[in-house]
Amino acid sequence: MKKTGTLFLLFACMCCTHIMAQTDSSHLRISLLTCAPGDELYSTFGHTALRVVDSNKQTDIIYNYGTFDFNDPDFYVKFTRGKLDYFLSVESLPQFMYEYQEEKRMVTEQELNLPPSAKTAITNALTENLAGANRYYKYDFLYNNCTSRIRDIIQKYAGLSVPRLLVPEKTTFRNMLHEYLDRGGKPWSKLGIDLLLASPIDKKVNISQSMFLPDYLMKGIDSAAPGKEGGFIKSRTVINAGSPVAPGSNYWPLLTISAICIAIACISFLKNKTAQTLTRFFDVVLFLKTGLIGCLLLFMWFGTDHKSCAVNYNLLWALPTNLIASFTVWKRPKGLSQYFTASAILYSILLITWYFLPQQLNPAFIPVVMLLLFRSVQLRNV
Image (cartoon, rainbow, N blue to C red):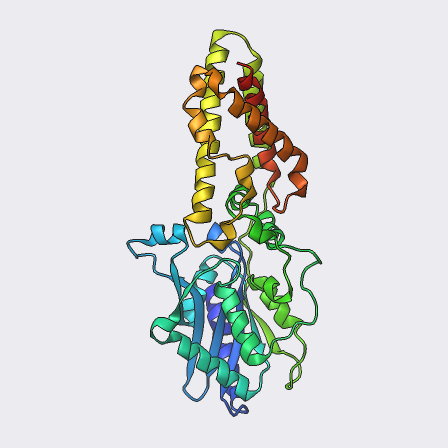
């Protein structure tokens, strides 16, 4: 019954579109489709597409900038290095809606109230983008994604003008990402994003930049200054309803990491042989893992095209040199006392300046830095 009702609604929308388009010399109807966030990480921030209905050609096409070739044999390498090509694809409304019906995700349609010339210009631009190599583009999470591409088209050909900020003043890209990750109950994903995405995402967003996420482009369209045709949107329709997102506790990373670090610190105070052996083992793991993380952050900075991974202040605690130190801490060599003295000073300064850095570091890493400081002080005295 639910699917039948949805199909009836889609059919009704198509019929209304055909009737309304007859009074427009362009015979075009252009709508922004905003898809609600899903439960999986890739769908956490929602999705955006454009719907173009041509009553003359009897076509109803969805333009989607969020597609890529998962079957590419070099997919993972290209994805990791930021060299994966995304491309514009087209599909019918039922094809597009299938995934969102299955996942019970709401899709909101905003019909744009535009003059015929603007509708024609947008349609021509989309057609041109579909031709050959034009359909491919280098994806950038903040500045060149499936939503920002559509935002730019609407701004360029329809004169989208949003008179006021859509977010509080001083809001950063990271703040906006955190909003979705917190609401979706994804604290571990938030931790990973805070680790990999560096200081560039701590820049304050302007009006246009804030519309890099689907919901905020939808809000921008809603609050846009009226054009020559009056209001910027003609109508707003919810095609499908539902919310698969299930919020959870956002404190699990901090609590879990704190518990582990406290347990390791407590064991290191014990003087029996088993405790001392365990302490040496934990030292190796601690410095090995932080060193590997540091090497990964350096690679993401210098070895990839991910601009958002550059200048990462997490490197102040995830020292790549810890990787070398990890191979020697088991034997407690005296020659490394200077290294641990220097690292202890660095960790102390980092903890003092934690909330004053140009990059917002995740508080769940504070227990790790405190443990690194504690163990560095202990190792320099061995």
